[in-house]
Length: 173
Image 1 (cartoon, rainbow, N blue to C red):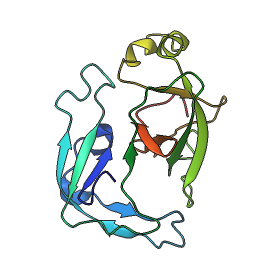
Image 2: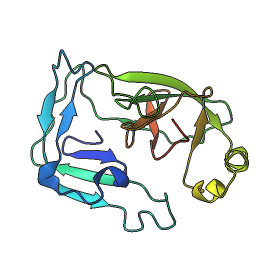
Image 3: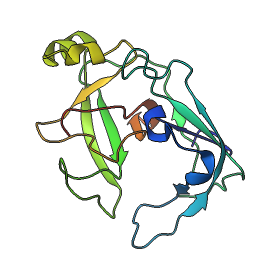
Image 4: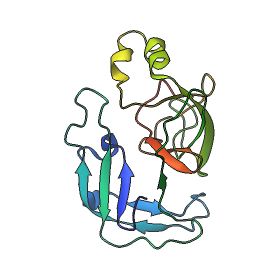
């Protein structure tokens, strides 16, 4: 949530979709005990250069047809303005699967990850994957087998309570 009527996400999450087919759930941390509220977009605004080059400019805005009501579980995100440094700890949250090909959780998941410098990240992605690591990407690492997975895309990556990035892609999860 960046404003009462605007949501930020990854373009690949909404590419090919129409606004009436999307639902936004706010304020929920447990889907079985859902206390959240649904909102509906009336417009999708994708970055004009999304996926040019591949995996780049993966950002979109969703304009809602109604204003989000803020409460103790639902607030607009704050933005980061300071550059990140190697090994800064970030928090990733999401509803993605817990393992490659696995099922999705009912409870919102969090994971602490560390910033990996751009050059180190490109060097670690061999077999032509380094070309997908663009200057607009922020690389993170925790431990082998831990990280963003299917369903986490478009979710927030936060440093000291401020938004620094959105989940774009990971290898493998």
